[in-house]
Image (cartoon, rainbow, N blue to C red; front, top):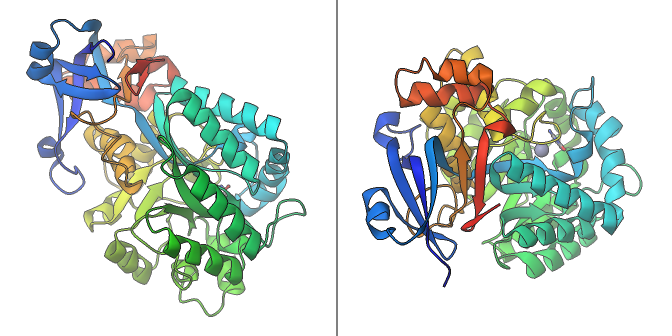
Length: 427
Ligand code: GUN
Ligand code: ZN
């Protein structure tokens, strides 16, 4: 048994989905409250935490916001070193910057050092969980899960499968994608905090044989996740139409091969047809909004409010390194800006929910991460709401607690992360 820890400060809690019910009925900030942590888990919150925590070690965060650790629902850790590469749109960006860098992950030492660097960057930015693509190399998956286990982080990852339209050295086959993914899934899925995601990169780089093989693997392991990309750029969608003329639409290239399901994560999902929206909602699939990526590589404006109000499930992500930041604060700000360009204002409560509970829900991991509630893992992020002079002077004018939080969402970065806790340990 470890010593109990009592964190005091303003505490963010959720009772519902703020995209379905009005946000004040779903999200609360309890001012001057507390969280009691023991043996890696949250034991109590609010007055119960204070009452039960009289002998606990105290960590006082006056005026700070104690949030669930951020959950980044779609990223590419192998793109850490090529983040912010200039001047290309999706397909040229993949060929010019991404594929040459991903080639390097055949070297286990390079993969391990990048995985370690990447997860340390995430923690610096308050992110305690991520769903990441790896490369075609099994060693790249072992590296990320090893780095995650060293830090006790709940991480979702999978070997990125590609058997066409990728350079020599970066292609597998339908059979080897199946065999390698199966071996990795059996090695890592539900080992400690690890979860495996079967990972066809996207239809342009997987033949129908490969998609079918991965669909078969998912049918054999339905408790695993499946992550891919969907309808990110207009040129990409036209290419998919040429490559798969028999498909009804982009989603059908996955659906036809058993790759549409409730545990499926569909990154971007910007330019959707009515049939695709209908099917994604019907199966309860997870859409992952990647706003800094969508502006950085010029993809388009995701319809966050329109899709969620129809009952589709969405999470939030950086999409590093198509995304231009490691920060979920920056991702929330970009989600706000994209919604403004579509004519709607997303509330801070909705943004914080999306970056934590919303992402945890699309990862089917809400039993462990994404909320401050007793029984869940004590993965926490403590935000300084006046971390820079620019934010502090705006914060000083705040009229209520939400007005005090919003400047940090819009202007904050890693300097706003006062502390991060992973499974009850302060990092
Ligand atoms: N589509 C297929 N691969 C990728 C990738 O690595 N990043 C982004 N943003 N889109 C993709
Ligand atoms: Zn991506």
